[in-house]
Image (cartoon, rainbow, N blue to C red; front, side):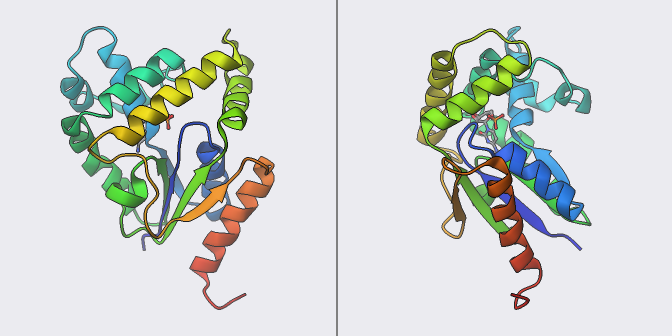
Length: 206
Ligand code: C5P
């Protein structure tokens, strides 16, 4: 039986952490769909055509250790605005979402385009300063040298591009539950998400 959890929201709002915790709690498979766009964007940095780059993706591309850099993030956001790139990545994501045993996918258009019938849809947000500080701590923890301002600039530029594009823009599905994590610890945000999913899995049990 399939059960799909769609988790969308702007960059660095906490989607990834929440998704991993939800997947671990319920034994669901997890797909960070941003990695598909990052791996595609990374391939374009050496001049590869974006659509050809998306078509040529292999599982090994998603394991590359340099996908988290701001340069690759910007390339991801640029290729993500191309409808043919999104179309190329669609079937893989839909097949993942409906696999047996449950799946959680996080991204920008999971609840609106990839899985409009998902059993649970969350839209995770946090204010810009909180997101920049969280992402800065994550990246410097990996040894990258950059300022909070650099990170803030990257997030704002991507959010603006992701929200303004014509195809599958960043926006909440009409039936998404909004989760603002600005004032929440990551544990509290995760517990809130788990509670929403538990109620959907066992309606009427409290
Ligand atoms: O989630 P992450 O920040 O890794 O995503 C990188 C970029 O990939 C985003 O800024 C966005 O442009 C694109 N993306 C997308 N749709 C998704 C996931 C990511 O357009 N479902």
